[in-house]
Image (tube, rainbow, N blue to C red; front, side, top):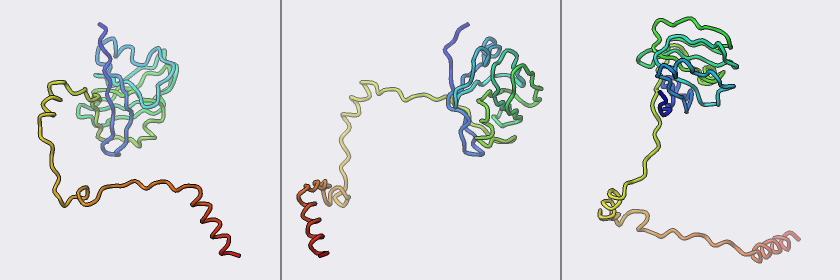
Length: 178
C-alpha cells in the first residue's frame, strides 16, 4: 500500500520554461484520492501529477492552485488558474492526467493550450563503482600535441604588489602634480 514516493520535473518544451522541479507522482488509488489534501500550501517549484485523471476536486483543501490537464502525449489540453478550495472542476475529455501546481505557475511559465511538455524523472548520478575506477586507472593518459597552449607557455600567477610600491607611486604622482 505504501510505496516510495517518486518525483519528476516538468518542462515546457514549447515555451522553454520549467513548470516545476519536484512533482510527486500520484498513480495509485490512494495517492490519487489524497492528492494535495492535508497540506496547507504547495512549495514553490513543486506539485502533484495525478495519473490517470481528467478532473479534480478541492473539497477539504485550504489553498488555491493551478491545474494543467495533459493528454497521453504530454500536450496541454486544458488550463485552470487559481482553482479555489471546495470546488469540483469540469472533466476535460482529452485529458489523461492532471498537474496540480502552485498558484500563478501557469502565468509565470507562459503555458498555453497546445504546448508540449516534457515530464521526466530526475535521477542523481551514482558514485563510480570501485571496479570501474580500477579500469579507468589502467587506461594510459592522453598526451597533448606539442602545439597546444599548455605546451607553449606555463601559466604563472602574478605576485601581489607590496604596500610600499603603492606608496611610492602615490608620492611620485603627488610630486609630479606640484
